[in-house]
Image (cartoon, rainbow, N blue to C red):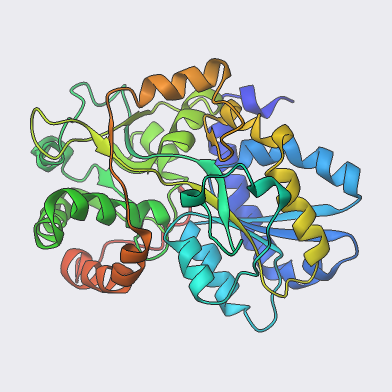
Length: 361
């Protein structure tokens, strides 16, 4: 069965990896040390790419790839818990969690031969990580439900969205932290948290990860959510979900604004199968795999691989007219702990909102 064309693929794609992740997290110790196995801890959103490209790697190298999929912060937290006895070999996650993994000593520098065409600004100088799939932070709506698309952040405060907004927990999801990064960049820190406190009155819940928010949008359990462009376009096209990525502006009449939020890849320090881990990184960063990144609406991490094809054209159209702002990830790392604490204390506070939602009910 071609799951990419199944109308239930979006639901299954989001749900099955989470069920599988729960199982894999319990048996990762066995699978990681099993003969011929390499373990990949990855943020959600790239399931279709892995499904397309990993069988060829497994056949060529004679190794099995076991995948643990979760929120981008959650996979790093997992690796940190296992730091003294690592159970994974390769990590794929979003900023600022990839920088957190580097600073926490979880990553081993590895200068893959296929990093040479990744721009210096998009990789660590010592080889600890490199951009694997470039991407943009976005919001998403269910276009069948939301007839008047919100244009500004202030629009989300309208009573029409009361109880219909959700975004992922900044402590466990890179896309959730991105909500804070973008609002503080556009409004300043104090005004951004004042805004998020107001937005909380319309929030239904905050999920542990971001990927399954698309399912909840499509089922009309919520009307607006955070996400990222690659995942949202892929779910709409290949998952049969009713959703549309959007970008918001700071003020009426302003340009919709966002920033790059790439999936980054790195080698876990002292992983049980480092040799296979290095081969997996080389393969995922190869021209062969990078040329398939536009198929899932991602942007190749390598500059020598074009954003081409029908889906590449869709990505270009989606970001046309959108203003991109730079992000100082070192500054984000310096502020991340304070922002997380402030969000927990001032925004969600004693609201009783769920932050451990792990799958659609």
